[in-house]
Image (cartoon, rainbow, N blue to C red; front, side, top):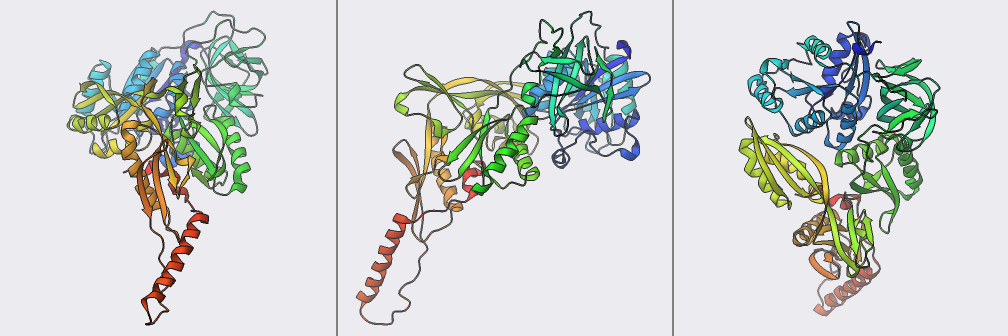
Length: 592
């Protein structure tokens, strides 16, 4: 295919604005997929994607239309996968910006527009769902005009569900999106914008070739990791794999390799030939670091090896997944896993339970902390239980994020109150038509549990939220420990700001009181900072009436039986063990 007849583009949008549905219509119109083979969300391969109605893994596909080769990448819309989106944008020359005509511009729409502008892409605005009664084309169109600085007539008005106006999208892609720039370099360079592990074929890379070409059976090298292998097969996705002899400059396709794990070929890496390696990698590569951590424990200790094997298999196809073994006196052996965000954690948990038939206990998610010791040493801790002796610590730094919230103007007051209640600071307030954009910064640990849920309830479901990691800042942080019947439960310990410790300690012991069942003896629940207890609740014992068999006689008979019972309860309290249910370890997620 001549380079001037190639068009590489992707679809960007907020969650549930119709990216995958538009991709379905494009596949139908170009005849890439026959009607009898067509199904909704055709490019979403996972059951989880279909159930949740979101794209988790991006999907490239090659279409042919009027002698043109159109390479489309359907990207995820969620903030957890923003690095994947940014790499996909680097692989393209243009982007379709899809906006829901009933909802307007949302936080993730803005984030993706900034990424597209940074990648210097040609943006084609598309207004979707115009067939719905709630569609407000004028208002949302005005929002797009003020965001992009385009004319109202430039906005394509479509309904991806019914197919109305979709053919005009293809025409605009051909006419407006530039062809790949011709390359004169003799070396081969390609951008890996995704990779996954296939049980039968090994690691498969999705690649955009910028210079040179990758031929079948060519020796290849990854420039960031240094891994070397063979391109066993190359070709394009239509959307099933269609093998070819080579991938030339300007093309998007797949490369089947003999690599054993995706850690050897990470997203953003540059692929070149081992025989004639390129001197410089393509710009923009960075290691993706997880910043949400949680402990995964099997409900039965017999399943520990199965859990370990399952996570090893998952990590083969997910290079962002990092894990270390963990041991808890209460929960036994488990694994501490790092994630890109809470959605990423939720997906991994569901995949482990479904695909590997595991019953799991997941501890409260936390972030990582940088600890500076008095002797000059620096530690990076992933859980509160790893915190060294406070007497040796000079400072504890926690991660802060830069966030932006898009809400209708009527809800701005509620949103600012929510931010300040989480130790956040509002930085800027601007308006796009009737929508307000609130820029703020806040500690990540305070947004991990129920921030998004509260934002949705305070804004009647209209608020949308996007964030990126900013830096680590030294704060007055302490470790909050929880004791059950006098024994410290390490899996419940959390890092918290000193000003919030008292309230959080009280809230948590009250919740634990509801969750932990009553015993035959009294159980104390306590929250402590170091050796100082700051909150307490007691679970009263079951009381059996041991005096029912006594009829009449002196009162001393009754006192003697009650004293015997009290003695037994004291002994039981000394030797008794409290059974802590699995829900207790996710008590932070159930905060009111």
